[in-house]
Amino acid sequence: MKIWITGGKGMLGTDLAAAVAWRGHDVVVTDKELDISDVDALRAFAEQNAPTHLLNCAAHTNVDACETEKDLAQKINVDGAFALGVIAKEKGIHAVHVSTDYVFDGAGQKPYMEDDAKGPLNVYGKTKLDGEERFLEATGREGTIVRTSWLFGVHGKSFPGTMLKLMAEKEELKVVSDQVGRPTYTADFARALVDVAERKLSGVWHFANAGETSWHGFAAAILEHAKAKGMPLKCKNVVAIKAVEYPTPAKRPAYSVLSTAKIERALGRAPRAWAQALDQYLDLTKTRGA
Image (cartoon, rainbow, N blue to C red; front, side):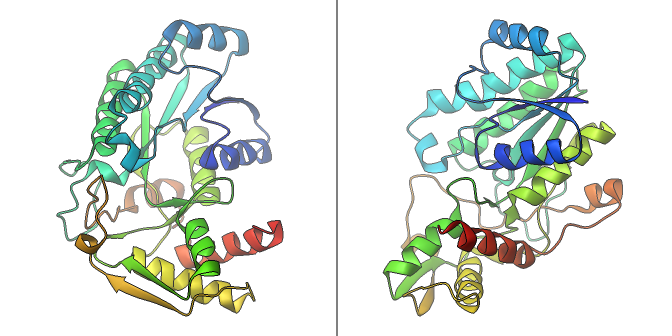
């Protein structure tokens, strides 16, 4: 297998490239130097490198910025997904497109299945949903979509990193408690994506680390686990607040927990708990001196 990773220098893409190499596959990485909405450029790259698989991690993921950068979100999240699907279909490449829990409206009360009704609340979610459909259209419904949620990792900006920085500066933090999801560690998601590629799974799938929590619960766990590891933090308390007390440009779903039952059956294993993954993240963060 020769796997082409787009968005390969980002938080997820970096871990994904490492996972692909660890499995013994050839890997080729592109990032901002290659415009994924340019079909001709993609075709030239594919013809030169002859990948057998494509894993698309490229996305405009700044949820709030997408509200004002609609054209850029459209170009990357929709047009890019379509163009990659076109090339995958044309060249016989097995393509996997990464998507998000934000395609759902958050009004549910039980984990979302892959085919549950969609209803994105913000530009980011809408463009990711449109990108899913255009990608599937371009691949003749043969492409693969894997949705995930609340990604965090050591190779980019994420919620734990932001919390650790603030906890080193402030004695008390206020964090939203009425938005619930499943935090997901990029290294774990990367391994699952390689599994999906190796098995050439098709259709729509969900992957997230086990267990659900709120942003407040996540932050409280970060504080507790980091202090247990001896990390020097000033923060003593994390206060729970409602989302209305912390307005953001983009509206977030109140409940975006993904069901991973389908992928668990396919891979023959359940994802590990997010708290366990958080411990590994904190160990690596401490070692890196971040």
